[in-house]
Length: 504
Ligand code: SF4
Image (cartoon, rainbow, N blue to C red):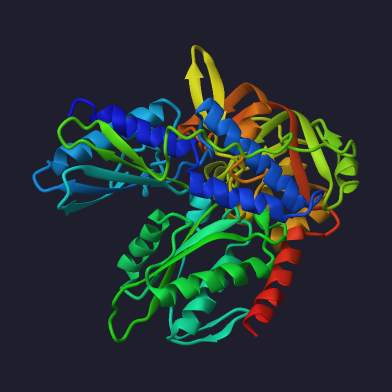
């Protein structure tokens, strides 16, 4: 198996950097749907540029490369222990190359292993089959969308849906509810893999497996094919829109399977994946480990470019923000304003926020901008270089954000998916704003980052450390302002009403 490790590294690299053609096709369709000048169309322009940049530079499409999950089929006689070892080595190597972010953390101590290896990581599912070649499929699904997976135990009562019974009608209601509850936090437009039945644990595995189907295929079961088509049409009427900004495109795929269940249980398990739907596969020669063919993509066919124009069409009305920022400046901004940041931003996500509740910041944060981001960084010589750096889901910082704003003088927070009522009240009291970056646009934002000025709290690991990064024209949209307005609260309410209408 002399080619095995290189084949696996190539699979990981392509999966992380090059969206498959079916996802490109779906996103091309979405690009046509949102009227120009809307926040949704701004988000899509950035997403399209980002997809192109990632492929051109062979860098991660999104900085969150998720929990690498391999689905492996082997001929009888292939040594699976050997294969598992090779997969682990390739994952560690791809992490060192910056194609994967070091994402594996000890669940008790919080320590990052640094190489994506750890107890039960990466995830590898083996199955034997009666073919001569090895097949390996890989999905990279980040934490933002993973956190929006949801499992329903029927019968149930759901918000905006009401009673949900143990039948196909109930399943349809659950799937539509799953799209609604994801809002922008899973980086819509997304795709859902669904399992009807099974038990709690296996139902989620089977739901995720549905994401290995191409977005374009048609379910061989006519009943499920009809359900998938109905959900696609109805989910896109709810109005969540790209990034949860509101709009006509919320879902790019719905893939459903039914498994047998216990008479006492009726689960509907939903795996929600984001627009950065990274999934590829290879067939390998079982003797040499060489790639004999790719699944989902034809390397001979030129890659379809996504961007129609420049990434973020500037109107000249953008507000330039140069930290340190003042209360007065922040109070002059309102929801919908587009800002361009020039100066330094400080990254901070879960570990930084939890630490700041009990410890002062290592730098003066008065008037500064905190960026919810866990970047991919590589050290080249003595310099740290940003390899991928889009925003992470902000709602995880909701328990801490008000305290951090008020106690350390932070004037703006950049993230994605929006934040809750406590943060909104703190923004109003203190005079600060929430700025929405485009989730998954890791290459687009990395290009606006000119220098890594410094880093603190490296003991939290690369994604969780506090990085000071100099940016130039970092584009973001005000979605929560200092006057009590939240685009996210508005869209959630409006889409809840639409969900009721769709189901009426
Ligand atoms: S696109 Fe959004 S949800 Fe998907 S992995 Fe990236 S940050 Fe997470």
